[in-house]
Amino acid sequence: MTHAVVTTDNLVEILDEFVNRVSAAQHAVALSPDGLLLAVSHGVDREEAEQLSSIIAGLQALALAAARYSGPGGVRQVIVQMHGAFLFVTATRGGAILAVRFAGDAEVDAMAYEVALAACRANLHLPTFPVPADDGPAGG
Image (cartoon, rainbow, N blue to C red):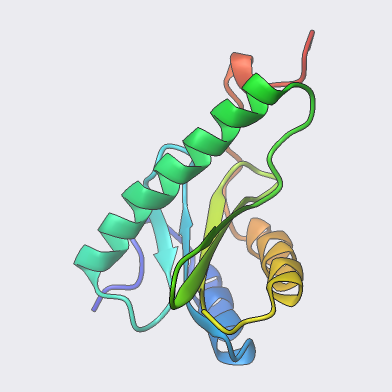
């Protein structure tokens, strides 16, 4: 099984370490803003990783569109609650997207905090992606 399409070994290690350290975490995925798979934690096969990338990129795009419609402020995290799991999606400072699937009995506030920390850590090992003109700050 291949872990990543475009990444450093450090990013895969960070995702694996996160999933191993946070007991409710099931897997983690990093992708570019346009949905290109950058890295995935252990336990996710290639086909599932590609499907997740498409879903996550779509969720992030919908969240950004909703934020533009709703007025000032940006998207911090997208949280999808399913019957047996949560999916947390967040952007890193450099524009990459990090998503983590958690067990359905996870404490949402603790997991939101853990994902924010993981995004900061992963950002150090991800490229910086340019922000499209219409997604930048108003007037800037």
